[in-house]
Image (tube, rainbow, N blue to C red; front, side, top):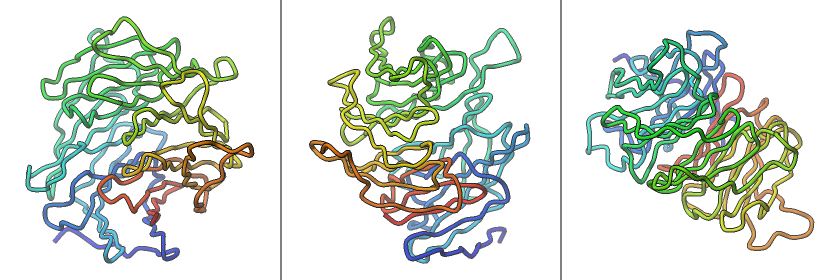
Length: 343
C-alpha cells in the first residue's frame, strides 16, 4: 500500500496538528466522506512557496482515532501557490460518484478529479482570449445551490461566472474600481464581492447592469480582503479590512452601517468563517495567533462583544475553514502546520 499513516502531534484534548513539508495557506474540507472509510474526511492543503512550483496534498482525518493519513498518490504539483481550494459542495453521499472534484485558483481556475488513489486534471478555465498572460485570480466560490457555477475574482477588477459543466463563461462583470479580493455566493444567481476599492457589492445575474453597494470602508480606499456570507441566515455577511483587527458584520437589509464590529483581536484579522450549522456563530483568526469563536447577540451591548471561546496557535494564523460535513472541527493554518480545533 502506498498510503502511510502519519502519527499526529496532539497539543491538547481539543486540537490536533498536521505538519506539512511546506508553508500552508489554502485549505479545503471535502463535503462527503471517503468511499473507503466513511468516517474519514479528506482535507486538501495548498503550499505557499513564492515560486512557480507549488503543490497540493490531500490527507484524510479520522475523528475517532484523532489521526491523519497521508496519501502520496493524492498529491500533485500546482503552478504558483493556490489562492483558494474548494471541494465540490453538497456531495452528501460517497456512493453518488466514484470521484470528487476539487477546484483551485491561481493563474487560472483549475478543476481536478480526485479518485480513491489518483488525481487527474479535469479542466483549466481561462477567459483570456488575446494573450498567453492572465490576470491572477485572488479567490473563487463554488455555488452550493447550483453547483455547475463557480465565480472567480481577479486583480483585473472583474468577477467571472463559469459554467463548469460546459467549460464556458456565463458572464464577466467589471465589478469594482480596483482589484477584487474575494467573492461569495448567496443564492443561485446572487453573489457579492469585496475589493481594494473598499466596497462590498451585491450582484444579481438577472440584472447584470446594476450592483448594490452595501458597505464601504470608513477610510477611503481601505481595501476589504475577505467576504463570508452566512449560509444559515443570508441576511448577514462578514468582511475584514486590510491591517485591521476588526471583523465587520453586515445586515444586507440595512446597508452602509455594520450591525456589529468584533474588535477583540490584538492584530490584523486574516480569515473568517461562519459556522455551517448555526446562523449566529462565526470564527475569526489573525496575526495575534488567536482563533476566536463569536456568538452574535440579538442586540450588541455598549461595551462591544466578547468571544465565546479562544484558541492560541504557534504563530500568525493565515487561514481557517469550518468543516460543513463535521461541524465540530475547525481547521487553521499557520507556518507549515494545519491544526484542527475541536469546537
